[in-house]
Length: 255
Image (cartoon, rainbow, N blue to C red; front, side):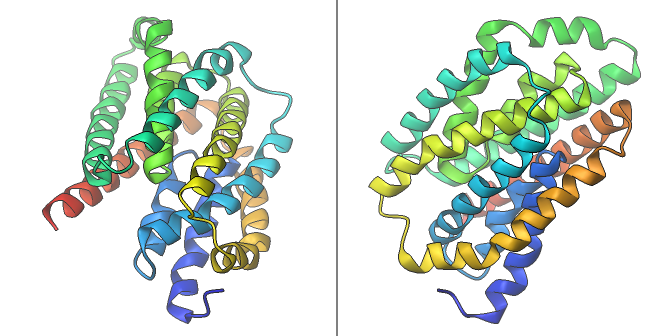
């Protein structure tokens, strides 16, 4: 188990952000692994994070178990499985920095465009275009791939689902179930790559109480945000998260 105080100084806010993300403020949890990676290797940070995510998924799925979109899950989950397999199979050939930079840049452009369209009063037409099934398949593959590579599957998922303008709780519930399944899909790959160790699992266990409490806090907070304001917050978060991913990706490639 990790005992370095510097690691926990970074891991505590990282886990809180994960909890708020799982509670409904989608996207901000992507900052968790880079935060922890300031104290440990990115691989170890990801292996510590995955069991925490799985436990947080239980809380978020339970909280929003009655509000989810079946059609989106049927379309995107098989696609995500393909993406996870590709992420595992190509792990030796793919540069995580390139993936993060590409996903981050596209996320920022998408979110800025969506905010502009909504301000111009033209969300319905854009929603129909973004909702084409083949885009859902591609988004699912991208979400699974980026989730396997760097726990960054949120932006691709959001780029397909957000334009549908689902009710707030339906969006959160669908996202919760999607990533709960995706995170379990990643477990065999992590086992095959030997990324789970006694030390990483023990460290995850130490952080679990905080993870559960912060997820419930996220649920409590998000239910007090009106639906329209919620979507604006998510778009702004997507811009911030996309910018962070693009920055981290560029730094990895240049470093």
